[in-house]
Length: 71
Image (cartoon, rainbow, N blue to C red):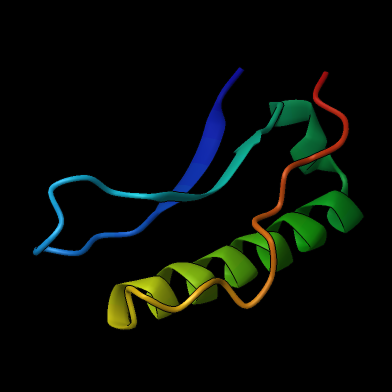
């Protein structure tokens, strides 16, 4: 199943940090509600990644999202 990853990209650090990971089935995207929620989760993850890239010592604004249900 395809997955979406949001990772940090800091040139000074050789390894990226995964901030968000979610597996998504194509059938999930048929739901407008699911799609809207997915975009919202990705937005939060991108904000967290951006914060970590610019302030490496700072923690995330909230815990990275881990879906409770993965088919």
